[in-house]
Length: 115
Image (cartoon, rainbow, N blue to C red; front, side, top):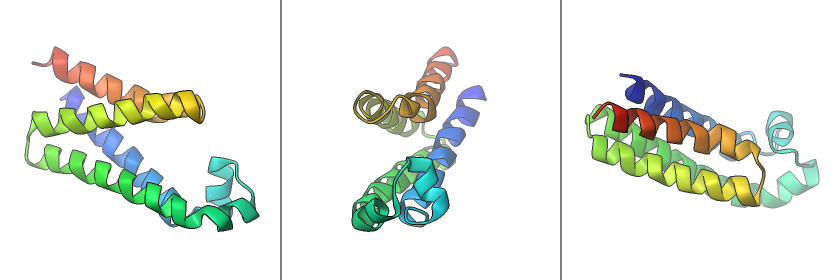
């Protein structure tokens, strides 16, 4: 049960990131979240939307795994999130480790413990 809750949390986080990157990127909330200027946000909004669609697809994959009750699909998408979160944490900022990598790792650990 804990693994399912954590997996759902990871999906919700990625839906929120999708919203931030695709809808709020140029708005004050989006700029504050990512620490960008108005000019930078305007110049990179297409790139951010592209990132957002990827995050949305990850969320949909996790949601599919939950609805289909398929732990293999859930684990696969959690591993994707963990790898990308580790990479982002090392290359962009440590906050990504806490927001993306840690919840995915905890969900994976909970899945393994529950097996």
